[in-house]
Amino acid sequence: MRKRAPIAALPLLLALAACGGGMPQADEPENSDESASSSDKAKAKDTEALTDEPSTISSSKDPMVPVTVKDETEAKDKKAAPCSGADIPDLVASLSQVSCETKDTNAEGQQRDVKDTLEIKVTTDPPKVAAGAAAAVVITFHNKGKTPMPLDFAVDPEPRFNFEVRTKKGARIDQPAGGEPALPPEVANAPGAERKISRVTLAPLGTAKVRLPWTAVKYKWASKDRAKGALPGHGYPRDPAGPLPKGKYMLRVVTPMVGVFEGVDHEITQPRAEIEVVP
Image (cartoon, rainbow, N blue to C red):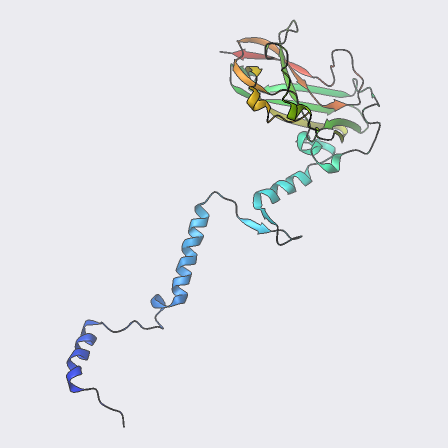
């Protein structure tokens, strides 16, 4: 027989029932552990969406090696950069690939004559550059010939394109004053990166482009402390030393192209264009 509740406890039970003060029910969604876990996951998802850090995914080759989405995208882009064709939109990206390295041991010594078939143009964007301001320098290589044209460039480990600003009479105006200082021993005695040759092949009437940042400033030699972090084989580092004065100059691009015949003025490997620096 089921025992009845003591009569003295009945008033208390009735009061609790009237006030809704019963114990939470375990099967109510708002009180379950699963609901709390879902709420936490939703909050965590919202927080992750607001962060700037890229999410990580596992490498298909080695699940213990995490790679970022950015790394995977860059790897795909780099892999997709062509080594040949009618349109090579980012020559630096192509030359930086291992797949574009040539096994031709005589690449630098061939001295091919390309002056009648290779057209090189240098332009700045914008055409007039404010003193001390930045601009984009675009170098365009165009094959005017009817046959594929191989072009070789030195990389160590990347292709280096340098700028020189000269007056119309040829005087260099952006170079630091005085001779180049000696590098710290730990940099001067360190081995430089291995020099290799990368090759792209332009199809007939094909084009390759390089787009590089340039700033209309003069330079000075960097401090000794900063020189301790210089890359071996890249010379003594420089720092900006104020804007270039207004005027018209020749902007020369020193490219890492090799294996071509040219005159004493390096008209092939060092293309140039007139630029105007404005106040």
